Image (cartoon, rainbow, N blue to C red; front, side, top):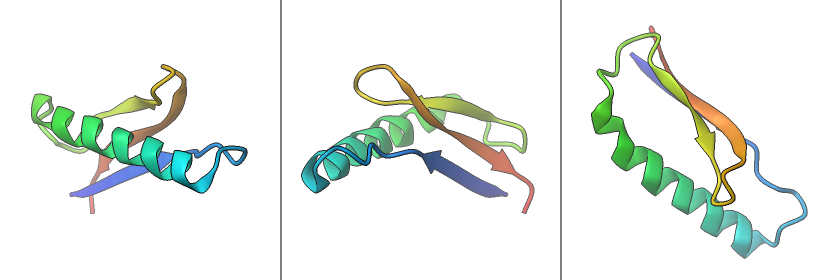
Length: 62
C-alpha cells in the first residue's frame, strides 16, 4: 500500500506558523489513522486549525 498526504500550506504565513500548522496536522491525522482499515480507497479530507479543508490523505495500491 501507499499512503499519500497532500496539504496546501498558506504562502502568506510565516515559516514558523507554516511549520507549526503542518506539525499539528501531522499529529492529529497520524493519531486518527487507527480509525481506518488502511486499505486502498480509504482516505479523508484534511483540515487546518481553522477548520478549513487544506488537503487530503488517501491509501492507494502500490
